[in-house]
Image (cartoon, rainbow, N blue to C red; front, side):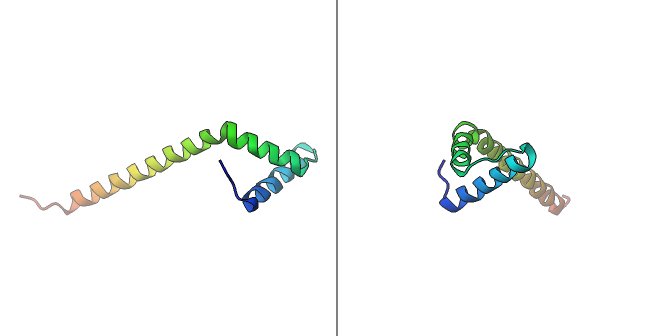
Amino acid sequence: MKFSKEEKDRMSDKLKNYFSQELDYELGGFDAEFLIDFIAEELGAYFYNRGVYDAEQAINNQMSQISETLMMLEKPV
């Protein structure tokens, strides 16, 4: 997974802030980038797959609503 320099910088800042505020640990920029790379490589597929599943659920919900709307348009015979 490749991120732009700007994305990596923003993620690095968030990670350093989290470590500082929640864990009282000063994480260096180099360590933050290594951690981001590890998370992306080792855990990224889990987040990606969850996003795919959530998108599928959203599409299925929309399709159900469309089907219900179409059924309401049906004329009695």
